[in-house]
Length: 120
View 1: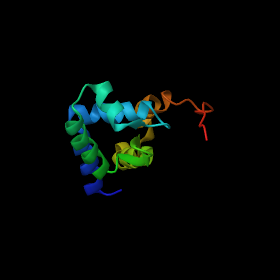
View 2: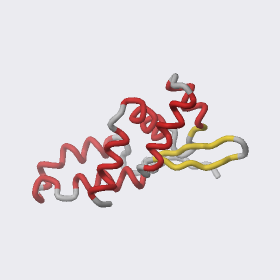
View 3: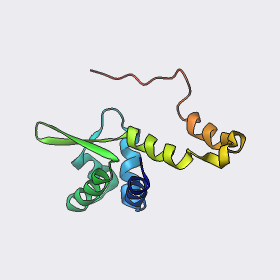
């Protein structure tokens, strides 16, 4: 992850609908959602949603996969990890105690040992 990739990802998320799309897809991991279902849940016209999905895809934040007639979108959690790692790499000048509350907030959503069941 470099500065330009990080700027691209943050710029893609710096718009309300795109941020809502990304958060919706994160909540629906690992199954993902069809483009039409994303548009329906967020009450956004399909053509507008297509534009937002394209921007998020070019920023590397989401991936798409064709399943028959549907295109299923999923959040790219690896890219999110890379963005967060880039932002926190030099966290607080190496003084970990300053970053501990932030790290605690991030890890609170996914306690150790709690795994999500993935269906094959």
